[in-house]
Image 1: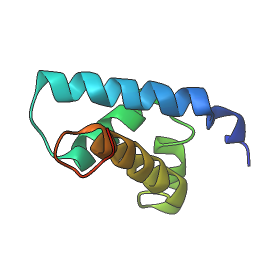
Image 2: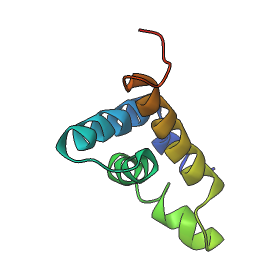
Image 3: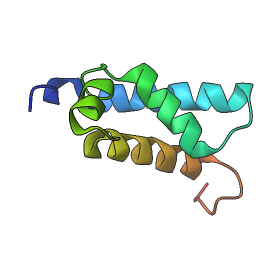
Length: 83
């Protein structure tokens, strides 16, 4: 996997931090926030490159967005997360 080195725990943490900042700035669905955060945090080889190759949201890109959305949801009050 050519882009494997770009998918790191640090990039995930950066995407979540970007998502948190976006949530403080505006109200939007978590999925949209997560998609934008992943686009900013990860190399285009992981997002746009794979999407173009597959002609859709790639499986890797989709899973990254889902993971960021899940982490953001777990941090939101009233989502049933343990505090």
